[in-house]
Length: 174
Image 1 (cartoon, rainbow, N blue to C red):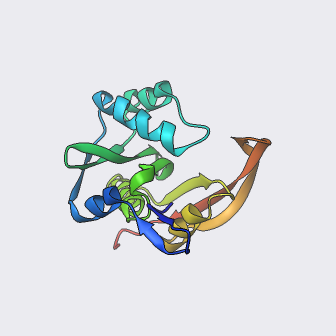
Image 2 (cartoon, helix red, strand yellow):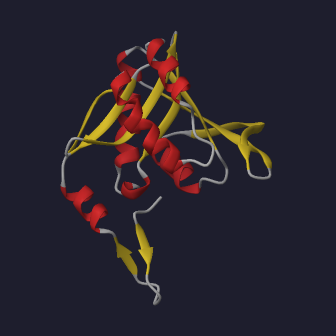
């Protein structure tokens, strides 16, 4: 999830886009249906098995809390949450591939957790691919713990991939 590559000598080379993205401030706002073209453009670049436009639209129609991260007028990331009673489920957190590794995913995750707290949520769940160590590290760093596995949960190039199920408790004083 880094916006850097290595040159032939193994030295990290950061793209101009990543430098610009790090310098320009980004703001969060609620996701709207009008954002779905930009969200889908990121989703298709970021994932080999992306959500469909219909999934995003259905989540918005169901009034799931969702945020987009906007920088210089362009959507560079998004997050989606479902809330039921005192539990929430992080459904999707994604920063555009060209700006990954700059803290945008963390900011989106924290925004979703704040939305959950504001709705009286006590426990938040999520699933993550075992093949995504960067996301796993982010979730651990933000207080999530592995609580189980869902066998063959995700589509994969070689059939199906398990999901690691993670959870965290939210406390009112945080």
